[in-house]
Amino acid sequence: MTTRRSVLGDAHVDRAEKAKTPFDEPFQTLITESAWGSVWSRPDISKRDRSLITLALLAALGQWDEVAMHVRATKNTGATPAEVREAMMHVAIYAGVPAANHALKLIKETYRDMGVEP
Image 1: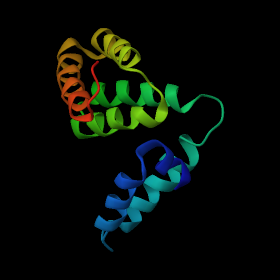
Image 2: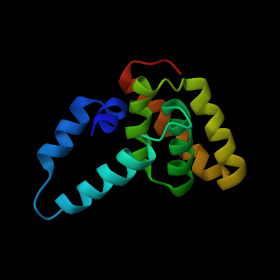
Image 3: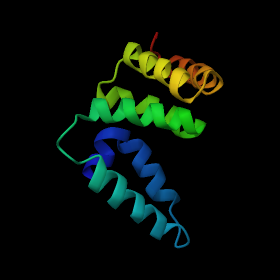
Image 4: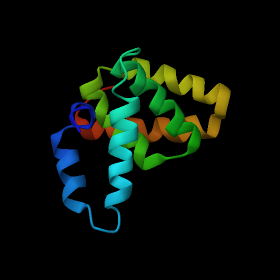
């Protein structure tokens, strides 16, 4: 939970925890333990690098809500707009121009909402 909060921020995690129900609690526990406890907490690469990898994978898979969430997390991970743009360049080549194009549109909107000029 410490890693999850350090990446996504307290406000996001507090909202997610408040929205948790008995139905989805096992799933939320799985995410917290596996993604945040096992993967994001590993020491071999930085949160910045994990952030860029995550954004590229989410864009390639068309997970648009998650792309926006992880763009917002860059304020905590240290990934810069230029680095995020470069990750999308890789998405264009390795996963397809349409995925990268749509991701860039969402990324620009998310940065604008954050008050960040990409």
